[in-house]
Figure 1 (tube, rainbow, N blue to C red):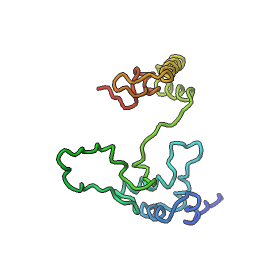
Figure 2 (tube, helix red, strand yellow):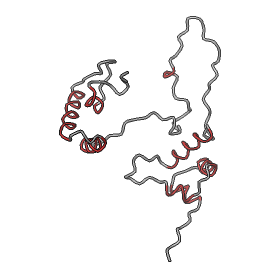
Figure 3 (cartoon, one colour):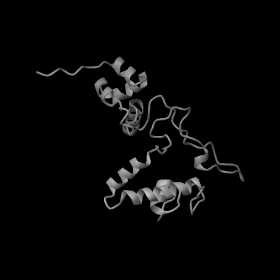
Figure 4 (cartoon, rainbow, N blue to C red):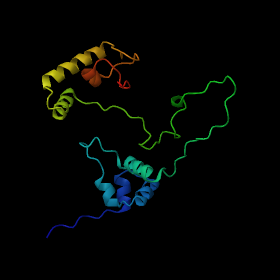
Length: 177
């Protein structure tokens, strides 16, 4: 006869997952129990997993279209701009939330650092025709170009090392048609 799994309480889940009362309410609306949240805590080896707080907020946003306690973005303009006034670009107006607390669905994406040998191993795994030595040589060449100040051939921004190793000196935002 096996051991019965331990049942966790909401206060335990709140402490272990670093949640506030609003996060617990969202988790309950999504149908999660405290055991589910505690099992979803990412281990140090699971870097791709979001922290439970962000995961719950993202799922709630996807399911219900909003995160409680968050001020919705002001989508209605105040009025027509004055004649000759400069209209700001969308990226100049700032983030669609107030303060530093943003649901993970709205956070700007960033690149995660990766060791050269780890990337080469994953690349060769995903592309069986690629050889480790050739991929490593191309990456080292692109890295040297980046460190020397190489710029994108299209927009002049600094190059993206991994992409440049495969397709030439381009930045991360360039898309070939």
